[in-house]
Image (tube, helix red, strand yellow):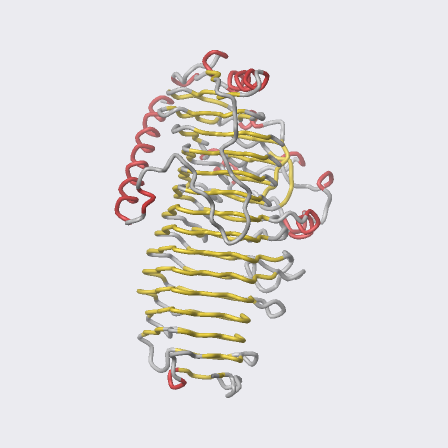
Length: 523
């Protein structure tokens, strides 16, 4: 029976790869072509460290030489110890490539060492054990923005230097048993947990709490990291999690976590100097997401996610309220200096998303997004939400400022643009330039923004094309608004709205709410 399940999974993986290939070929996006071997220079609007593949000795340690055996039927051999023996031997020899050759291999969690390249060959699949006891003892991690001890991830790197996971093979998390086990379990309010020291908090397996699923891969306080070529399938939760780590490259990675709750693809969490490129995502949550911890604890730690480049990638069928590129909601360490460009999002819940709330504090700033196409987005294509958990939350307000988004094409979306700032902390210095929206149900909806530029923006929608509420210093240039609603395409409301420059839009195309000053429009 077990071998028949493996065969079904193999056929599923091949079908998934075929769908990806067909999808890339029909988008007109260059990512369907072969991934270049050389890493192109980074040309970002800010300084990024010189990122190169880690230098690891050219010697190979085959896991079969350390006792590994392929899977056979229901009583398959568990290769955890054999893989660790190979890793230890390579480490003691000064480093090298630990080879997982073609075939099917069963293992518990793999803990890496410095100067190791864990290489899973083409045609190889590592299936991770369904025995939860294999993931003990607990290890330190950050769980949805809060530090905790919990079950070990499938692959764990703790305070390492020069470490890689490469190859054309597959890691299969076999997440079904974790998803079923976690269903219905409640481990409390994580924002309250941050008020208690780690040694005393009732959070995670180390505190006797069940229901918290492990991540697929965590790199904790590590440096000079490479992930390249691999496929990750059916993670229990998050897939690639870079935590307090720096100088990392994640390229040509395929993530299929469509069935996984919270199956985020790449999570950059208080990480710095990272290149994410040529990756393929079909995820049960955000494709690429930037985070930096929750509330009191993360405000004290104060390590931002910064100096990040995400380029040349595709996200399809990203679901459960998530997006192609996402900032938050865990933002208390801050997020700054991020450059995202050349991507295609199709069938995602959202496209470009900023989500945070009171209590997070700190700032998201200096974000540059360029050259994104979106097709059939389920909710908002461009979304800034400062009320992620609702208006009743209290605490220090986060700031979102200096966001520059250009060259965006959106085809098919209920709400193309939604920007919402807090009453006490408006969004500030937002630029949307060269944005084309067609087949939208609603138009742009913008609330509490200071210094907003809409330049070369066209919106074709069913309802009113542009509604602004408490927006100060709104600058429109070469804006085209086509909607099917009766009346004017622009509606301005809010007693604090002012300094609205219409550009090519005539005043006859604008309706003012009763509480809005007649002097809101300026030359």
